[in-house]
Length: 362
Length: 72
Image 1: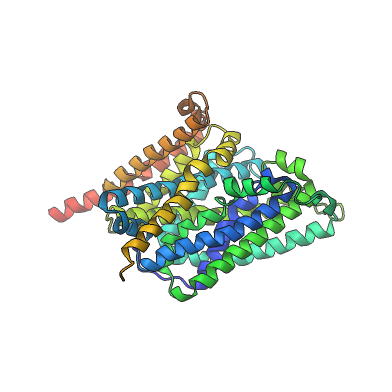
Image 2: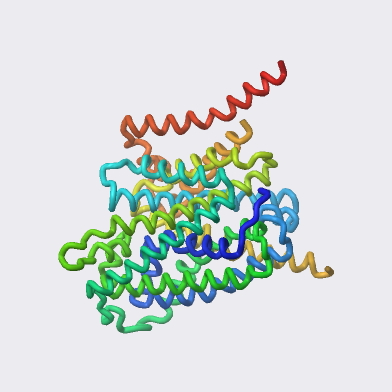
């Protein structure tokens, strides 16, 4: 484990940037139709319980990473295998996010640039950041969070000024309640909220462990509200049918902004805010895979892993799917159920149960 | 070399997971189709790709040469 410490405010910012990133980009909870914002809020509430599971595990082993205490909990062979699977899960998730942002860049800003080059440029920045360590990741977050906040403020201001919002697009509410719950448990709970499992690799770096609960709950709640608000904005501007057909609804919403017949095509500017989020998500996932690999394989200089793991993420992002439609289809129908559900909910609950039994006497 | 071995193993397993998900979703000949983005690369892209792959070997080669020097 790297000898570094991050503050609670830094963790707060990194958690928000991490969760917002690709959730702002892709159509979130759209199976619930007009009520997708409700699905997001319900998922936020449930994800706070999920966080308490991760926190309980952390409190049993406050100085160890997730990939370290699995060995203590379920034995050397099984524990190490599970730790390795978690590392693969982090890398695979990083590759998925990288692909999404690569395709987004090509669709909206660089149509002539090859996907490999756009993804390579992004991963090279990520490699440099994770090579420098978690403190640099956190400090970069502090710096970029301000930029993202300002851009978000201007975005909402411009949408409001341009008079695009049509509240009637949101009605009727609660048209199909079971569908909302189905969307929560098959989709929204895993992306982006369940993804905070990755922070079990970062909690040991926190300098004030006592403030973890308040910080993380605040970060999750703010993210949930921000995502619900963005979804309301998308639905009220575009309407459900258009969002369902759009690959990147927020960018389509931004594209429709027209102020005074001269302020148009602002999506290119707001891509900056999305790229900040994407960079963070890939960086946090890859960094957690890096420290996990270093501890699992006993590598003395973890920073040496930055480049090879970054290249692994880059190549995986290229072979993950033959096209973007297939990538999204898998992301909605296969990845949450077969990969995210076990790694984000089933295994942590199982580990917590074992930790409880093992530490009962203490 | 240990680091390169670990990374290569991880890439093979990750590609395996990706193909596994393709298989679950019922895509025909998933392995070949998923490699499409690599097949359609043009010369500049290939050059960048080989350059990135080449850089992977810089660190192991340098540390090997340093060890050799230290032995002398």
